[in-house]
Length: 442
Image (cartoon, rainbow, N blue to C red; front, side, top):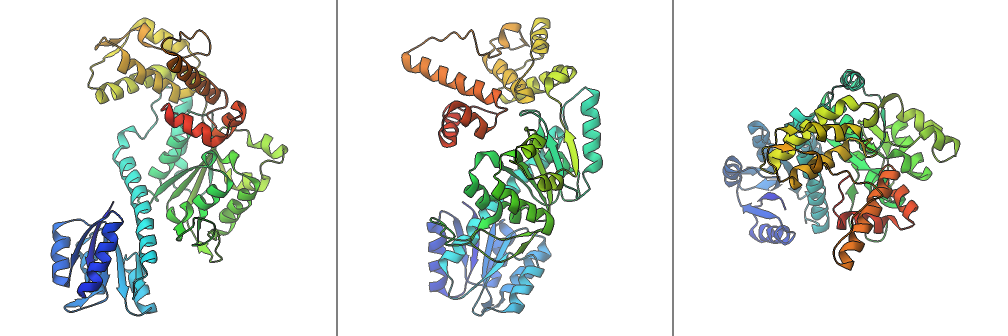
């Protein structure tokens, strides 16, 4: 749901468009003059402004000029009776989003609004990322993490592709966000795609977008993640899971800086930074003919390797304190630290799930511990494969067993959806359903 200002001096046209947009679930304020539109813009921030070109007291261009003069950030769409090259160029050169030709095709209008919603969603994610700067840098004490962080800041302004390698839970996406934040692209979008969570066809549609009618269910054109990330950073997580077919198309984007939407033949140019990550041995996949060598070298211009938590145990105490403060605040508790035995227990464990697993252990301790001052050893619950004490009804026992089974399989397979589903001999769709059902955070 987004806020829309609609400026149209023809009453029937205005009410029809307002009714259509309201029917899509949006909040619409419609006005019939340029003066009223300016008055509304001064009072309220609108996500989208839609304006007719010819008005009784001015033009749509006048409204766009007013918006730019005020420094207002909104998606501006001009509605014109003629498909004018001059108007379209003016809109694009003056921070406008797009234009529509009269009579307005409602499907085209809906498509533009859907694309704007998607952009707004990504922008909100990036706003949260920018506001969370105090948590942007890694929490660490070890020399190895200090060197990695310094290296990331040094290479951030380069346009070279970066491959981040490390086990699941080590913080690969966090490194990608740091690269974006410390780069000159940080005023544009950071767009993340988990390549292992989608099958081949869905991944291509997600990356490259698609044209109306490209396949069953493609009722309108949709922009892909590459198009949305233009001039920003795109993060391709679990890059080792993509099919050879998709690898060919990805290679072309990296080489030519252009692609075509699924079902289309229009070449779309992009200028973006590509950061990818994997928990797999890509060189081994190359030997097995499962990953293209030329794509590997395109992605791996610069490598960042994150060691597992068990190899930098000096970071555990500082990380534990960081998450203790975080979850104490979220749960309105006042924990000050850990008992000696509790910290010894944390330091002794090897963390197959790495920092993500440590985070979950501390969160669980804060929520379940009755003491509101210090975390004791019995509050540190480390789930292991053996020794489970199952109690309750039959359904409860089965559910707990299934949850533990999935957690163990995820850990063993480095939290890869594809590998875990194969390991459990179930479909990826069923696995994703179970993960959602049991609210498994990883």
